[in-house]
Image (cartoon, rainbow, N blue to C red):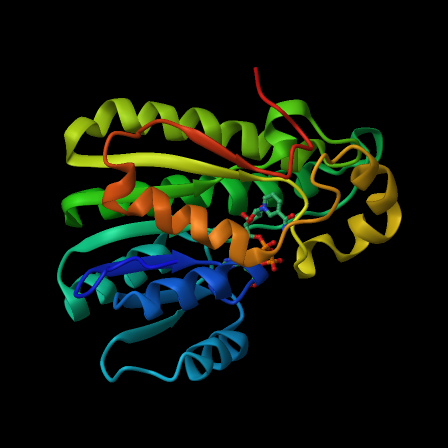
Length: 247
Ligand SMILES: NC(=O)c1ccc[n+]([C@@H]2O[C@H](COP(=O)([O-])OP(=O)(O)OC[C@H]3O[C@@H](n4cnc5c(N)ncnc54)[C@H](O)[C@@H]3O)[C@@H](O)[C@H]2O)c1
C-alpha cells in the first residue's frame, strides 16, 4: 500500500500485538512518526527495533491501556515529542473465554476496562491535541455485531466501541474523522485458541475460504486514515472475508 504520512504522527496502542505490529510497519513505511504503546514493554522494544528506526521517529511507551493516568502520561509524552496527533488507533484488547454463567464480576470488568473504558480514556485525552485533518480508527469485532458464544464480555465491549465511534464522529464533526475496523478471524496470538477449537466451522462460513492476515487489517486502517477516506466518518468497515455480512 502506498500511503504517504510523512511528518504526521500516529499514536497506537496494542502496538506489540499481531495487528498492531503491522499497523506500525505500514505507518512507518509511509513516513509517519510513531508513538507505540503496549502493556508488554519487551515486545514493544522488539517491534521498534524491527522497524529499523528512522532516528527520532519512534517513541515507545509501556502503557496500561486500562489506566487513565498511564494513558494521560503517554498522550503527554507524545505531544511533548511530536506536537499534535494526526492519527489515533487504540488496538489494545483482550479476548478471554468464559460462559456468562461462570463469569465472575471481575472477569467481566477487566474486559470492559481494557477494551472499552481504555478507549474512552485515550480518546477523551487526545481530543485537545488532534491536528487538522486527523483520523481516529477504533477496533470493533464481528463479535460486537452478532455476539460470540463464551465471549459475551468481549462482544459487549466491542458493541460499545461501535456506538462510541458513531457518537464521537457526531461530536467531532469536521475536527476529525472517527471510524472503526471490524475484523473477523485474523491470525494473531489472540485467535490461536479460537482457530484451534472452532476454525473449521468458521472457515466453512467464510466465503473467501481462509482466515485474515494482520496486514489485511492494517491496510484498511491506513486507508481510513488517508485522504482516500476523506468523506468517511462514523463508519465501521468489516474485514472478515465475508464471515459476517452486515445489513
Ligand atoms: N485477531 C482477530 O481475529 C481480531 C478480531 C476482531 C477484533 N480484533 C481486535 O483487534 C485488536 C488487535 O488484536 P490482535 O489480534 O492484534 O491481538 P493480540 O493479542 O495479538 O494483541 C493485543 C495487544 O494488546 C496488548 N494489551 C493487552 N492488554 C493491554 C493493556 N491493558 N494495555 C495495553 N496493551 C494491552 C497486548 O500486550 C497485545 O500486544 C484488538 O482490539 C482485538 O480485539 C482482533
